[in-house]
Image 1 (spheres, rainbow, N blue to C red):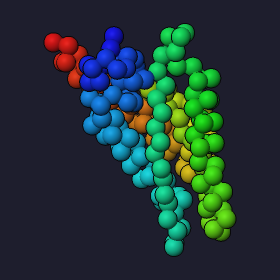
Image 2 (tube, one colour):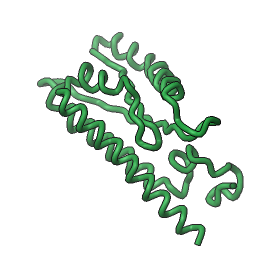
Image 3 (cartoon, rainbow, N blue to C red):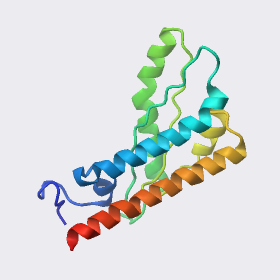
Image 4 (cartoon, rainbow, N blue to C red):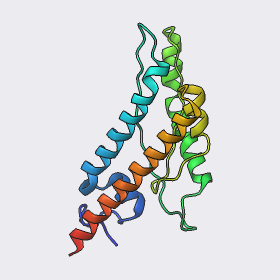
Length: 160
């Protein structure tokens, strides 16, 4: 089915609806802002040092159904590697300036799936306790799922 908001220019696939559709921009931005705020709130006490600044960049990429009908860990691995490669030059630039920079990637599937290396990023790079990392990961997944329902309700309302 063609996207109603783009007048048939793009198909209304799950990745399009959850990530790119102009009709869902507010919900997508809200999701991204909420998740970034959760990560920053959890990480600031453990990472920030006097005179330093914690800067987090949210670059979302949502995995939707593939040909097999699900977002597999392999697809999430590809997204993870793309994000690390994308920001590697930023890390190199900051290191040339004498700053300490880490470019870990947190990857969540569009339906709330959690990429296995997220736990390592939360505990080793952001220095969260295991309990806090698990709680944060669950809250992020829940946020993704809540936004899916919000987007779905809006999409269904548009069909009536």
